[in-house]
Structure formats: C-alpha cells, structure tokens
Image (cartoon, rainbow, N blue to C red; front, side):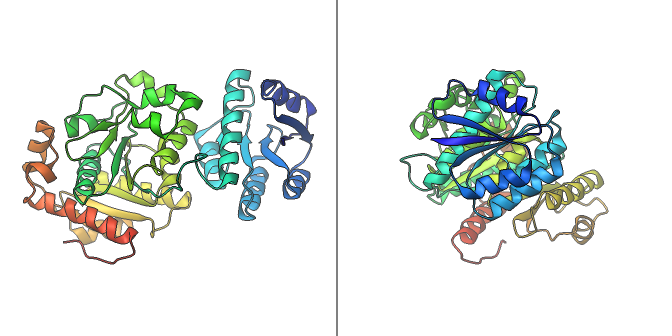
Length: 385
C-alpha cells in the first residue's frame, strides 16, 4: 500500500482528501504542514500521491514539484488551489503536476482526479503507460495555430494521409472539440467520436479505444471530435492524456489537430508532443498571432528544436515577403505551402489533396513534409522541396 501525502497548513483538508478516497482500499492518507517536510517524505519513498492543498504558496509548490521530478520521482501530484485559472493550469502542467482541481470541488470530482493520478503514477513506476502493453513507440505531431482559417486542419489531415501512404500506422486526432472538421476533410461520418472513448472511463484500454476509431480509405484511423459542441465539456485533460498515452502504444504516428487556442486540451497534447508544426499565412493578423503563439510556447518551455513553421499560401502577392515573416515571428519558415485551387476543391469533395491531386504542388509539399517527419524521427536528415 502506498500512502497519499496531503500537504496543507490545515489538517482539515487532509480529512477531506481521506473522505474522497474512502472507497479506495489501498489509499492511506498522511498529512504534513509544509513543503520541505513533504519533499523529505517523498525522497524517503513509499508514497503514491502528493496532494498540495490551497494553503500552500503556488510558486513554492511548483518549485518543489520540479525538484522532485528532476530527481526522478514518479509520484503522482495533484494541485488543489482555491481557484483554477488558465495561468495556474499551464504552470502546473509544465512543472510536472498530473492534474489540477479546485480545493472546493465536490467529493465525486475530487475522487476521480485523485484516482486517475494514482493510476498514472503506478503506470509510470511500472515503466509503461498501460500494464501489459508494449512500450510506447508512437511519434506525436501536433499541428497548431492561434488563429482560425489558416489551413491547420488541411495540413494535419493531409500530412496524416501522406504518412499512411508511406506504410506507417497513423491515427489522426481531432482536438478541436467544439468545431472540429477532420471528419469533413476526410469524408468520414462521425459514427464514433472521442466522446465514446471518454465515457468508457477507467475501462478504456487499447482494444476498446480502437473501436472508437474510424478507418479512412488511406489506411489511417481517425478519432473525431464530438458532434455536439456542448459535449466538449466532458472531454477533460486527464482523459485526453490517457487516450494519447494509449494511441502512442498503438500507432507509429499520432497526428493531432487543434483548435485556435491554448486550452487544456492543447496543453495536454503539447506535453505529449515530439514535434509541433505551427501554421501561419501571409497576412499581418496571422503573423502577429504566430509571433504571440511562439512567445507563449517558449514561456511554456517549448524551444525552437521542437517547433517547425509552415507558411500557407506562401506565394501570395500581398506586399509581404517570406523573409519579413521570418523576421517578424523570429523563426525560419521550414515548410512553404503554395496557393492552389486544388486545395479548396479537395476540401469540398472530402478527399485530401495528396490523394485527389497528388501531382499538384501543394500535395508535393505536404508529401515531403510527411517524409521529413519520418526522416527526422529515424535520425535521417533530408530536405523539403
């Protein structure tokens, strides 16, 4: 039995945690009043979960979490501030916290978060994301943009199809949970979506998850966004992390399409990513949003080695030069996707341009993008035409 360590100035909060875990037979709740004592106990071993209560200073708590993570601790960590904000959530996830839940949450919600953090810690200690499953081997590529309408979903879907054409096992995940268009891009009916996987709860394993994936004619599988925008609320960050963790054990490549924001879903995907492709266009608004996005990524710890830039409509005559875009965003353009009527035509047909018009210039660039992703993963250096 591994103990749950609650760090808070008040013992009453430890009692609340004990009540939330009353039905977990192997959870013993222990209380300490300060972070130094908590770190000391963690280093001594025998603990499964650290719960940081609302009385602890946030900055001190995150520093302590980073320290124990740097030392190799696999303990689960749940942060329980009085109020959960986007800033707190971002900082916590980057520091190695498993989940964040309001200290005033109902016992049922608290129990679910704590149990998931305990399970995740056990999987880490066992050296695998899922007991009995093969070691994770998938390469996660997240396609990102803070501005809508820049062609992000076109890029994600076509690169995924191109990877499948290279005889790789590929899954495309639509994390634009309210307005995802992956199904439209691929001409797929949403007979199953990510909602079903989330509703499977703790029973979800690789075999069950495969049942929620829809197969495309190219051979890739797709995990589609909810058909109802309101269903996005039930797709939590912890469930997304669980799903991605299973997918990387099932596929060579996990391609993730995202909404134009840095919400919990996107941050969770980024934490799992081996590569981030930021899509921008030849207009001032897109360039400005890309610059801000890249600054935010750097603040979150994502350096230039992880991030590639794709410039869509790179040949547009709009009084901007590619060099000016590079200077404005502070990074070189790696991929240049030209304008071509074949792209909107392929979108309207629900057939990716790499299939519909494989000899077109956009298709060639997207195919070369897929080849470069493979080459980089396998340690081979190549050039993108």
